[in-house]
Image (cartoon, rainbow, N blue to C red; front, side, top):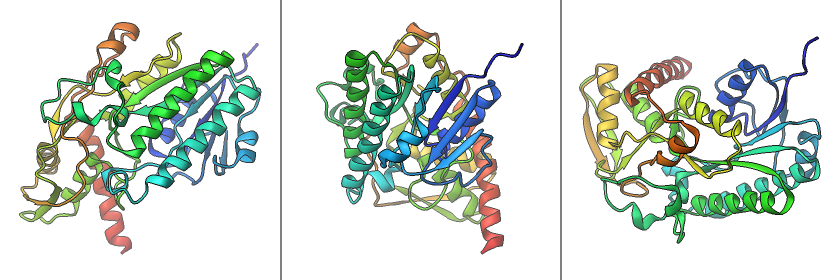
Length: 328
């Protein structure tokens, strides 16, 4: 007698992390419904159902959140890289859109008595004041308060963490929260202003002629940690299968400057380029995940070097660049 597969809903399935999560859950034998405002741009999703709909609309949320679901993964948000988040031009939309999605989804989960929900928060919730140096000692989870994120995107994420935890306390919803630190990999946004730094560096190197130049925002000395998508999903699945709500950091501890990230992409490509520094949004000066808590409580920590993920990402983006050239 075959047992029924576990049913999961992935909100934001048309996005980078959501798309990879759909594939991962299908590999694990789940029945998966995906929902997003747009279809996935870069891959065919193996979901059992895909609803193209706007989660700001309560009717859409009522349609996709059904009482037979065992798990919801809420990754849908209005977001992008520094070029989108830090200009200040999109603040009202970012806050309104993301908060509306979270308010709708958590309330519908309560109403339909869905047992478990995962919420993807962000390293952007951490106070700007503790990220002013390039040698960031690491952002421990309890440093979130007193609050002072560097962007409205971060403020909304922090509000929504509290929203889910309040529903856990008041309505018995089983909630699991992770603060993602710069997740990257193939099949994600790589051009157009919403891409993250690893994709942007790979694209700039792939587009540049040998011996040419590439642009880097600011002085390029700002530092970050970047986590490859597969390792991120290992952490998410481990968190969902635990009894712990978090919030937990899911990130890498391998700190690198944006200049060195650019050089890594050049090295992978076998191209020598000059770096031309230009004015552009940089975000905080230094940001590094501290994985002490998740390592202690869940036994999770990434173990692959950044370069390995960058090589896979570069290979994928290089193909996209060549394709767009031929198409153009």
